[in-house]
Image (tube, rainbow, N blue to C red):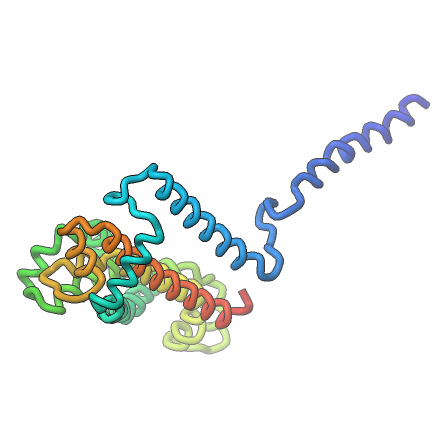
Length: 283
């Protein structure tokens, strides 16, 4: 009888121990718990505003030197003057055109080459070592060569932006192609599809969500090379504005240019995220 009574108690004991743990794990901090509708943007805006307020508070207390770390209000004031006096909007437009021109050129070349590298092993074996080698080369070290090859015109700026994007993107495209399940390809051949149809209608469509996401990521990388590209005999662009302000230790203007690049990049990234969600609702 004693054994009969003790068994249910022993069986119930682990449940009693686990119940508080389950309760404790509930809530927003639970692993991969989805946020309620509308909470994500609200949390993002709230956290960003909090960071800016703390930054402003620290600057107003005099804990930082304005010459080296100006306050957000000083940066916004400098940005307002630059919009009115230094044609900052035009410089931002020029930089945006350069980045998108180099990025689209890199994408147009990287997508077919990356698909071919993954789809045909002989092409991958031939190209991957060279691409791996070049993508580890520091872009700033290649600025003198770019000037020798293209001069100091617009071609050099586009080339440097393209160089920092293409060799990264082509390997990401090849990885996206490799992730397409082999079963998809075999089923397509079974139902009578030819090689071109398998590539276009099966493999490319299967890799498209990952490809769009990688394009969004590499566009951000392209923006990171803007300063390098626009210090080469430039007289326009955000990189030129930042570099000119640096010469005279105008830190608020330097940070205003940097902040504007971040704002443009953030807006573009969020737009591409929205397009990705709308285009691939099934994910």
